[in-house]
Length: 310
Image (spheres, rainbow, N blue to C red):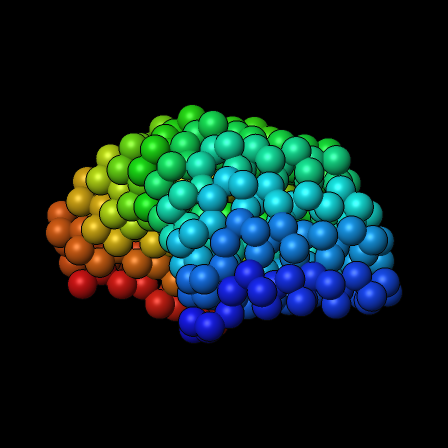
């Protein structure tokens, strides 16, 4: 928390950045700096004007509640000049004034990049963002040549539906380079089983995937059919080493869904670590839990298991 940091500080930082021509790494943490406004991000954005050698850019503006679409536009104003940029992390959690319009401005400045290796975008609890905004962001992924890691968090963005998931999966590059995929859509009540269906039939995009994390906890429309779709997708992930699944309080899940998922687990011959959370899924019984545990015991490379049903 940095309650006294505001636009004045960002102006000084932006001016200082202009002098650091050969800078390769930037990491700013302005979490909960509630005095920061769009104007501060304008000053900071100007400091990025000639950073042609910058490879890594990270900024956390979570809980900066005064930031709007204009702020996102101000910050990204000179992103197109960051021609060496490989890794980017932008966190705007609980910036509730950001909408699809702001996401569009960000996408327009990043969608010509071909050299991204890692992307992290956090817009959790930005309730004005919908499928339209997610679709805009997906434009960034098209044409990436050596894309290794993607982390997206749209938790509590209640306007996002299955169509947003479809846009995401369809626009991921099929270059077999993606190794780490982290998706969080917890508390998105309009996501259903059909959202998980889009993971099936996309195996050409996930051949090299080593780590997969999916968070759909408290998505009430996800049921056993979703687990069937997910199971089919898992069968294609031959290189997967770590799996994290969170379906906490998805009340439509039963033993039937766990049986489907168990069939998917059987095929994960390279799996070393698994973490699953099915707590508060009250229709899942001890019998299903025992079946899952029995399947996992047969995976010879598995070293760490943390599966919760209680």
